[in-house]
Length: 125
Image (cartoon, rainbow, N blue to C red; front, side, top):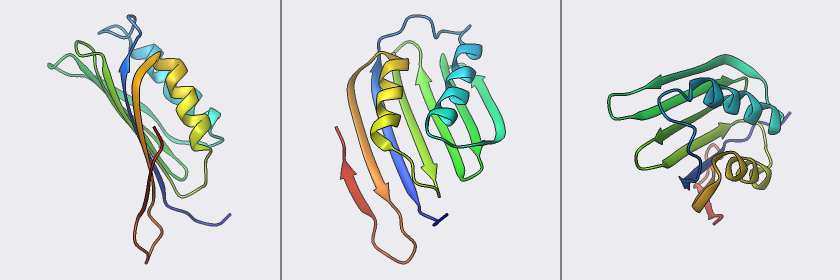
């Protein structure tokens, strides 16, 4: 496997109403499902915390790096990062996230952070 340094940055307005303070299990399953969807393997089980700002933070370590997100329940807004040293299908990843979050006003960037070269940044949506 060739090592790459791919970073997808995703943000969107969330159309779901079931991810409030009691949404931990659903969000944890989202991380497991996303890892599977992009053909990765879990290295460190998902960790989630609900903050005093009524926001969820979650992270899962994958064998090739990590996936993390922050979701503000009042603002209904998510920001998510997928960073991997293994190639992954970014369109498939975005579609999966759009479907899970019931997303609106999606914005995404893809950054190729190849070692020794300038970053290549592509706006996806």
